[in-house]
Each structure stands twice: as structure tokens, then as C-alpha cells.
Image (cartoon, rainbow, N blue to C red; front, top):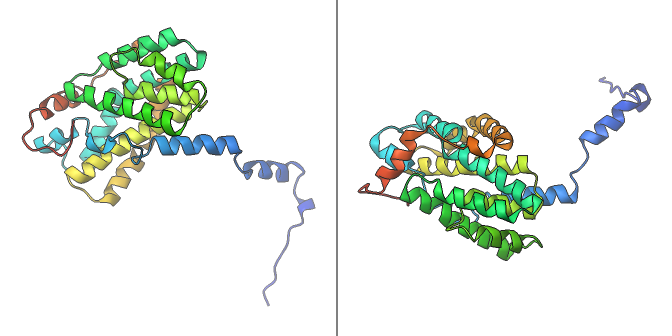
Length: 257
């Protein structure tokens, strides 16, 4: 007959049960609320029209540069490390800090810089149309006392870029910077993967494999951006920038960029 051995709690050290209880503790209501806001705001379902932009990827697919899951992963990884992903993350970080400090003059300067940095007409449309829609949606459905003041500061710029809008909203809702950066970069990567799934096309499972493979890249870029000075903004993903320019005259297009 099989027997069951029970180890009494007294057989463990006094610190172990307490340490285990700490590891298994449920997140606080504030932590859960912050997590849900990040998940909602940076999901493909948030009404900013992210699904309609490819960041120049559609031209790279038409050109034959990106034709399978491996090439898609490499393209997006380079954009994250050396292109718009990294620059946007640095802009988001500095927006968040200026907004948290209540420095409206710095906020206006960052917003103006972010709007001017785009390398093509379609990339300008991509970031500013989403930025305006993001800030409007958050203000309407997720109000916060500081949000109108901070939003007014960035509205003095010619247009509101998406990373600036995210930084303002995150600061107004007191969302942690590190988590917000990681979520924003992951959302950006996931949207490009979605574009690749539709345009290459590849299967949805392959798309998920690409997103999973990009997690370390997202984490590394988020950590770098959190510590980078504003003058560290710059990129070397020239082919992605050229792709966004070529896309403007591409004959058959599913996406707006």
C-alpha cells in the first residue's frame, strides 16, 4: 500500500514560510490597475488605428527583403535596436520625466522635437495620427487630474507624436517608467509582426514565435532608453527609413505607411 509522507511546517526554517508567502502574495489593487492600463492602452485593440500602419515594412515585403518569419524577426529587431523603436523609447522616457516633474516647458520642447524627427511623410502621419488618437482616447475614457494640464503643454507642438502621448498619459496616471517603456516597445513590435502576418503572409503561430524571440530585444532597448540622454537619439536603420519613403509611391498598398 502506498503511503503519503507529510512534512510538518515545523520542519522548515522560520524564514521559509514567510518568504514563500511574500512570493505568492497577490498584487495590490494599485499594481493591478496599472497593469491593466498598460495592457489596454498598448494593445492592438486600443482605438488609435495602429493596424493600418507598417512602418515601411510593406515595401520591404514587396521588395523581397522580408519574405519569411526569420527575415521579419531580423527586420523588426533592427528597427527596435537602431531605428524608430529606440528613438521613440528615449522620447517616451524624457516625456515621462518632464511630465512627472511638472516641467511644461520641457514637455513642449520634447513634443516639438518628436514631431520633427520623422524621416518621411508617412512616418510623420503614423506617429502623429496615433499620438493624437491615443491622447484623446485616454483623456475621454481614463481621466486623471494632471492629464489636461500635461496634454495642453504638448498640444503647443505642431503635432503630438505617439511616444510623447504615451509618456504624458503614463506620468499622469503614475505608471512606472520601466514597465511603460517595455510595454510600448512590445506593442510596437507586435503591431509590425501583425503587419507581417498579413502581408508576407506567414501563419499566426510563426508570428507569435517572432514576438517571443523579440522579448530580449525589447527588454534591452527599454533598459537602454531609460538611461539614455535626449541627445542620444539617432538611428542607423537607413533601409527602414528608405522603405517608408518608397512606400509613398508603392502601387499596391494595404497600409498607410
